Amino acid sequence: MPAKSEKQRRLMGAALAYKRGESENVSDEVKKVADSMTEQELEDYASKPKTSEKGNRKQR
Image (cartoon, rainbow, N blue to C red; front, top):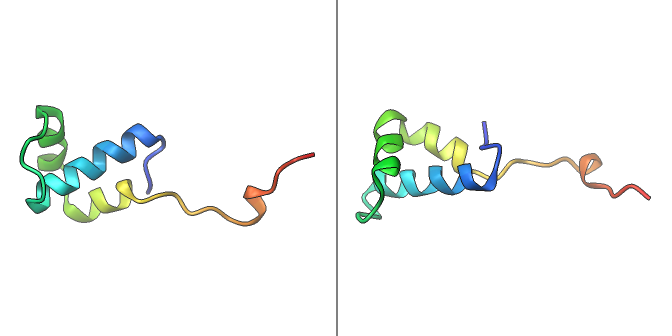
């Protein structure tokens, strides 16, 4: 399930990087999120939502 906003996606991405050991200097909030979720859950939330072709058409 992807995040609902860009801010959520960035938070989950930061938590994922921290959990993988790729980032050390992070906020307490990021640490809390990383500790409370599995790596797979963080990947799911950090991924961009998939869009369908029908949903992307502009209305005229």
